[in-house]
Amino acid sequence: VKQVRVGLVGLGTVGCGALNILQKSAELMTQRSGCEIKVVMASARDLTRSRPCDTTQLELTTDPMAVATSPNVDVVLELMGGTDTAKSVVEAALQSGKHVVTANKALIARHGNALFALAAQQGVQLTFEAAVAGGIPIIKALREGLAANKIEWLAGIINGTTNFILTEMREKKRTFEDVLKEAQALGYAEVDPTFDVEGIDAAHKLVILASLAFGMPFNFEACYTEGVTKITQADIQYADALGFRIKHLGFAKQGAQGIEMRVHPVLVPKTHLLGQVDGVMNAVLVKGDQVGQTLYYGPGAGAGPTASAVIADLLDVVRLMAAPSAAVAPMAVQDSAVKTRAAARIDQIKSAYYLRISAEDKPGVLRGITQALADESISVEAMNQKAPANEGQTVDLVILTNKVVEASMNAALEKISQSAGVLGEVMRIRVDSLN
Ligand SMILES: NC(=O)c1ccc[n+]([C@@H]2O[C@H](COP(=O)([O-])OP(=O)(O)OC[C@H]3O[C@@H](n4cnc5c(N)ncnc54)[C@H](OP(=O)(O)O)[C@@H]3O)[C@@H](O)[C@H]2O)c1
Image (tube, rainbow, N blue to C red; front, top):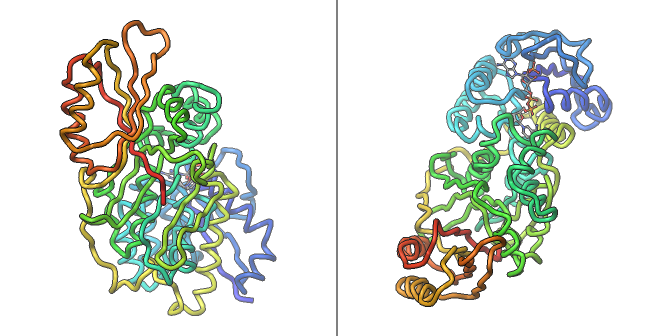
């Protein structure tokens, strides 16, 4: 049996998880790949730290570049994160003729185009299954399982931290700040929680999914990104009363004006499967022209789930070392077929909307609001008036509209916010029945 030598860059949650699988399931790994896979080297910042994995048999270094360029390493697992050092490390590994497996969505979404070009030029593999939705094999599903389909759209809950926050707010009526603190203590949130709650992490993943779905270069700048920081307890309860759950979703869709890539909160029907995905779980719904809708559900983070995806990639790489020409195209279509596509702006999308308008409780206010909507030909599907707790003469007007182009909604909101008796900013959340 041939031996393949692996170098680990990063011995954190995912790095240790990967090392544990390779050590504890060594025989199964050989049965699956036909090779003996041996981790020979690893890097971390602090070599004195105690870790939940056994590094005694490895050559250890604090220099990730030493792993990337070592003549004793055939495949590098980049599990350090970030886009600065990690980028140099991956480039150096590829330039040294090594295959690279990464879990780093920020790196792929922002620098993937150049990195894949380099990998192709060097004749080596660069794989990233773990970068999107952790343990869910969604990259393999898009590239291989759904290869017969034109993808029409996909929608996913792809950030466990925000899903956990929204779930806890709904089920336990807790505040956003309170749940975020717990998510950080439980280790769900990124070190810098803005990546989670402002939707940046989800945008990285969505951009990767969109590129594979539509065979186009990664285009992170074209992704509209909105987080969950403005969602209040009141919105969650009002949505619930109307039969909806508020979920933070990533959408990639072939729209009339181009490819829509957007990450934002959405009201989805309670009864829809995506509405039932709670806590830290992830799910991606994919609509193919032949298969119809398929749903992929599972843990999006954590040592075991993420390492599961990393090792699946590693096994692919090891198998392909014997027959590189049999590799599946990294972008799901042959490199020559990857083409840039027009990106839709967010004001060009068509959506239904949930509006929460705080207003004075007096005659005429409602007329101003409905007039503003009528001026833009927006019709109202449902309307509720609620008195928020502890407020005197104000009411919350909750409105569900029909589908309109977002630019029309923006124009109506502009008028509503200036309309007599309307207080503060109008809360607007897109509504999607996902069918
Ligand atoms: N955690 C998850 O559930 C999950 C899920 C999907 C994808 N990912 C991705 O997987 C990657 C790793 O995440 P993680 O959660 O395992 O991170 P982590 O626990 O923070 O581990 C990072 C590792 O890299 C090392 N490292 C970081 N910066 C370094 C530097 N400048 N020089 C040398 N070593 C450095 C750290 O060393 P020390 O240990 O000495 O600090 C640590 O061992 C990231 O790209 C992340 O986005 C993670």
